[in-house]
Amino acid sequence: MHDALKARHRAVRDTFPTNLNLRIHRSLSWLKASESTDDVDSRFIFLWIAFNAAYAVEIDDRYRTAEQEAFKEFIGKLCDLDTDKKLEKLVWEAFPKAIRGLLNNRFVFARFWDYQNGKMDESEWKGAFSAANAAAHKAVGQREVQKVIGIVLSRIYTLRNQIVHGGATFGGHVNREQLKDCTSFLSHLIPTITEIMLDSPETLWGEACYPVVEA
Image 1 (cartoon, rainbow, N blue to C red):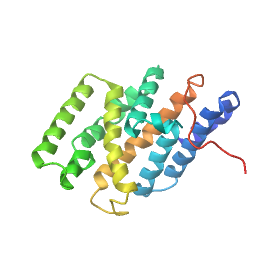
Image 2: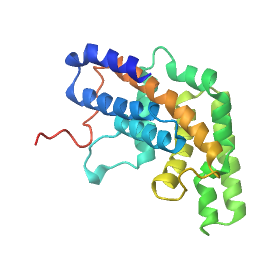
Image 3: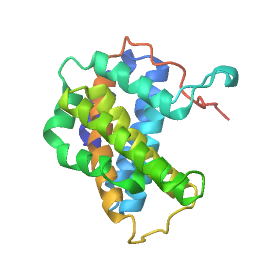
């Protein structure tokens, strides 16, 4: 997917705003890295960085939104722009099984780890898990694509925190199922996001984090 998207970007980038070009260029560089390895841990990390490069904005710390809220707002913007229903097709045609697997997997539910760390009792996390999944399955049934992707990304974010903050072993066997599902989903989500951004050069995407500064 990288090569086709990179070629498309090269063909139009001279007419694009600088910030949009920077987002797409950075995101595609990490997508390429993910496609250059068979190691699932590395692929997951590269794909999350590609996603981060696409959505993150540079804003005043006084008004900084929590990261999950920021990427949910980004998904909402993409859904509004997605006239070809690419995201809807991704959710309901390409990955319904992987999404169900992630929703039912307690290891990517943040409150399960709160329970493991003694922050809540067993009944609390199980009640929260049941309520969250009931809401998620309702959103799936009502085809609320923005909400479904937001929920899935929240689960993926839990795995991201576990790995990036050293809470997992490289190449370890205990998290393989959720890691494979998350990586598979992101590997299709990132190109879809890039396509929608390429289709929407007039949209205000905000200032990219860490602008390029010439030495």
